[in-house]
Image (cartoon, rainbow, N blue to C red; front, side, top):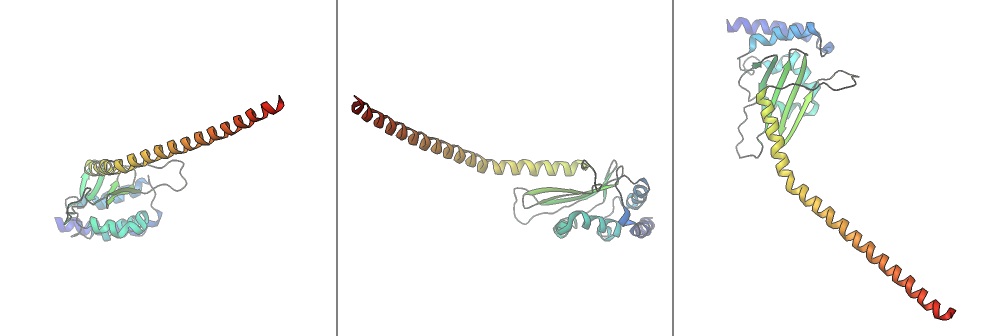
Length: 210
């Protein structure tokens, strides 16, 4: 049964690869084809079924990620299961760092069956990023939807990064205030000197006039 599901999914993948260049967000026909490809693979190890090498997955990922493809894949290959949460099909990395990290590296790939949008979340070296397919020429970007696991990971990374940046930002603000105060003092001192010079000159002219 599992083998037949894999074979069916691979056949669908081959059909999809022929039209991958015309994939459009919101295309219902291609959404149904993607559903047919992904649904039988839920619960499988993505590496065992060559999920990431399927043209319909790889071609779209490389288009989204560009030079971030390889570091993302390094993390995603630690994923152990293709999962589904409502309309979302996704894989999430299970990377375990050899050293303790303030923010653990993590990657997730998500396909939204309602919109046919593919998106990637990448947390690498403390920096969190989101990449997603968009409609060319659209006035507004389409916000990708992520499953709870990836939402939690992204929010946690953002909070930790904000906390880590807080001391540096506070120091920067303090330096800016100190600099502004110093400049104001210098300006005031110069103004006082000029006023004093003018007053001295006026006082010297008054006796002469008398």
